[in-house]
Image (spheres, helix red, strand yellow):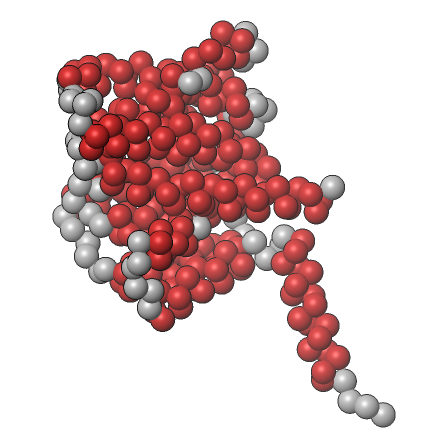
Length: 312
């Protein structure tokens, strides 16, 4: 059972890394023909509209006192970050945006310690800091362009909201099914998102233009996969593995970014590979208590002991 539990956790980790790592590419495609507000609003509206059919059945199961927290998790975990990240990508490189996203685990720990009495092992703190250092090295190896400080602030604020949201779910919504959280949170967010889309005249776009359709389609896919599906999976991971482990998904994002760069014939240097190895080392240290890692560590120690044994 424990082995299956660990495999599920790491399977969710890899799947979420791929989905969210691809989200930055979808954002850029959306921004080709739409402004940042339209991309974010369309993303959230798409995420919510597919959840609407389940609202009534879910509402009957959720305690009234939990509904406020579910709406709040939608705002902190999706609504505000969606607009902040889209606005940031109008001025910042996507690689740099993805790197700053790696601040999330640090904010999970800081917010958890100061506001939620979160108990964190030093091993986890060290591992997260090592992975973050690897993310910074990766950014420097990829581009090194920081852009406007204000837009950097948008990403930092977004990751702070992520950290706050992760702790709140762990503390207030642990017993609420992940799918139910997603249904109510995103259904609610579709209302303000629709108002924003209408106010910006998105319905007046030239949908005969293939480029417009391409950008709108990318934003819709971003909403369905990158928000609805990914968030529900993240809620599952959060409840199974805890906030610290779940937040390290942000360190898987650079690997997917490199993959897309390779697909688009982007040059991959030794510095990039070394940076990824540093990130992996940090993830390894953070999760050194996991069974497969304990087994591997024990195997290495055993092999070392056998090699050091002198023959009689």
